[in-house]
Length: 84
Image (tube, rainbow, N blue to C red; front, side):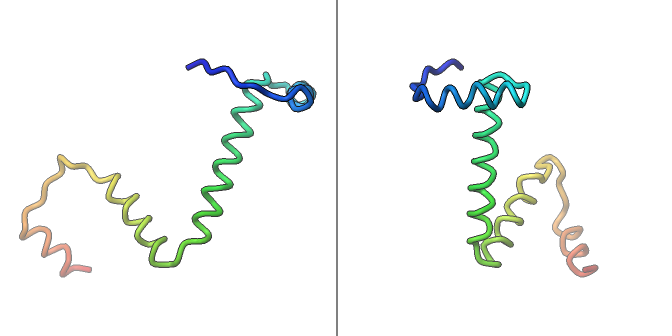
């Protein structure tokens, strides 16, 4: 997807200089910077969560990895619970 954005000349110059030092295109440098910024914000959000919210998030992540085609009978389910 192609999007045009207005960037201040000073910022653009700095981007060009940094991209030359990093041996990246300006586009790749901006993508890298945005990924870094987003991951930092996600980390900050995660650190602000309570322990219970972190556990809920972990459970949600595990639930999203479940194979929905893998069925278990009620008996197998309760047997597995008893074993734990």
